[in-house]
Length: 305
Image 1 (tube, rainbow, N blue to C red):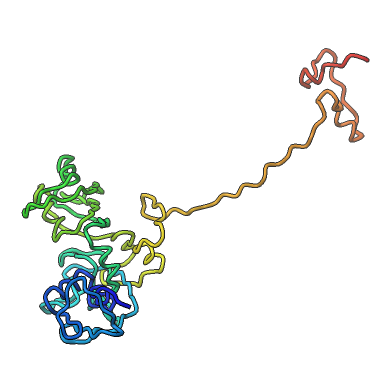
Image 2: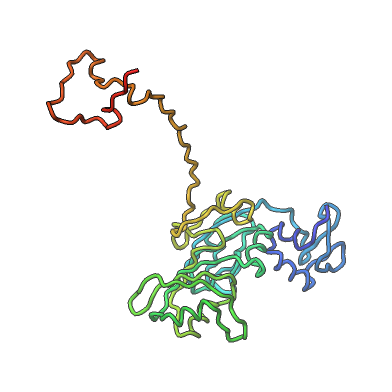
């Protein structure tokens, strides 16, 4: 069956769809001996597809890995120097590439996968997926600085950032910890904004990408995603409402027992005045002149017929 080339290449583990489109645009892909074009379709069972002169591999089984990227580790597959990459930290066979950016001097959650469709879904600007960070700044922010960050800031290249959610978490020495939630991912955006509004950034930890959370991972640790996590990232099922602590609330169905039917009672006036008499117990007469403790409706005697 024919599919778009960039999709076939992504399924073969060559990168995200956008990365595969760049390969096609630069002439690195040929179909049946001719240079491929963006948007062209092909059938790997019929057509001969070459990428950099190498036949396109069969699609790999999808893998999804969450990793805590430490500082000074590159968010790439291959490094231009001896520095370590996130791919070096995951000793699994097959193709895995990071989704999105995280600066070398930043740390936290990175998603590694060979699912090009998911990578495109999470990184394309039109989807505006949230990314949550814990940010340490060198100075205590005032309300004006936080409001400026929330509204959006014009960067050095003229781009105005989208509105963001920024919250003060706690003081730390002369600085403070902030929670920042972005819906875009420009290179070094947090650090540049901090410098522009007078809040130099000391440390950045990414806690969340979309619905995926860092959890209890420590620097350098990684784990496979669970099937519910994968489904949530792909939008295949609705995300449960989350509490402020970030944990999904349990949907409890409270089953109430059926209401008890009250036993039919005779009118109070018809009830025996002294219930103890039915138990063969002597009835203690009321002292002379003392009113009975029964309600007035019971003390009232009926007229003789």
